Image (cartoon, rainbow, N blue to C red; front, side, top):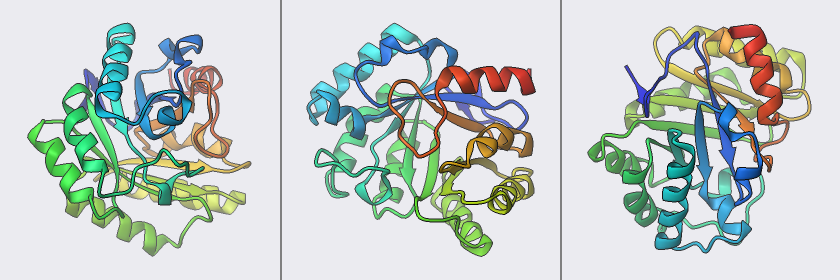
Length: 240
């Protein structure tokens, strides 16, 4: 069984992930989250210097104050909703992952990145689970493309496959949810719809087997992302 910190990750019991994207996370309802994701690439643009020691201190402080399981994400510009100057090129990211993975409970890395295999090996040595992610901010790709991405995540050794894609109509919402339903019986899947019409997919995806669902603390990190308080209430209503 895959666990992030002490939280078992399995279909039917979605884990609510609160996204820490700035230094004002303490002002938000972070305690409503089961897990916190540190979008370090975004925090760097909010007053934290993109240096290993400063990042270490930030993570330790977050862990000490919240006692929550932490996911480390250092997104690459190609798969970010808003690329920023502070974001690191691929050749620099492994240094940060190697230094910081021991401090967290899981790591997210883009499966299309050339460093994905290296980061997963670092996580394996540290005995931390890996979310192999794929993001498409332009469209929901054809089913066979999503299947290929799932296969790549599996071949790389990721424990969870996360697909996040733009949803433009109800048919695409259904298609994303059906993919999740089909493969969640044999894989740990996180399916995330993005865009103005994506709220339904974020609430309904756990019903179709999605094991994680993401919400913003104070700064949205994806189009259509719900805030933590709203999504927490919806999950309690439908899944408690």
